[in-house]
Image (tube, rainbow, N blue to C red; front, side, top):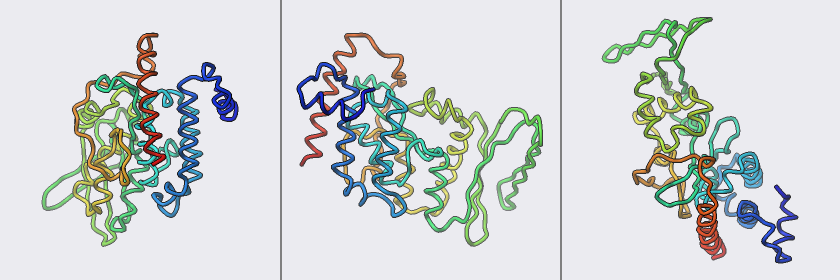
Length: 293
């Protein structure tokens, strides 16, 4: 990919034919992040810096060029979700930007996903929870649990040859010293994975155990004393934003039923590319107009 200065020089000199839609998207995103750094900083938690978020987001796009084939609204939406939640994309598994093709909008879009460690961070911010953790249970582990009046949870992992994971559990310890836990079998985890918009793409493929742990923690969170903001943030996980709002990360997610997403690399006839490029140009102009207002 040409560097940013080369791309901008070509745009300035009118040599647009040498610039791909992907390169234009990169420049648009970079310009937006720099132009609106103050607004981004206001949306960020105190421990995060807008310049660092911009660098991380641009690095993520350079590492995965498929993101630059996505519509500009969904790409910017994912960045703003990360900003408002204070989670850095693809850093230590805090959050992910997942590119996929939507047959309903007929365009590539970005799905924002909270990572396992990102979810732990959100829960800890509530101030009510001292610790929260999740573990896999394998075939050769010693494991026993019981719900009811006398809650019981005992897990002794085998030191070697643990076998396949067949269950996952999450445990939260309150600052009062009390505990809550939830156990899920792998079949239940699989049902949730298959309902995901990206079941065969991204961290569900590259980091299955982490996503399974995240899933059981999300289910446990339904019973924890979390703030409304954190609850909404967790609910908005794995959604796609196409319109930019002040509190985009805290909006109720789009409940539209999506068809099985197609991976970006699986799409690509010349006719499709021409159509999608035109649609992307229209989306980009629309979004950039909103930014300028």
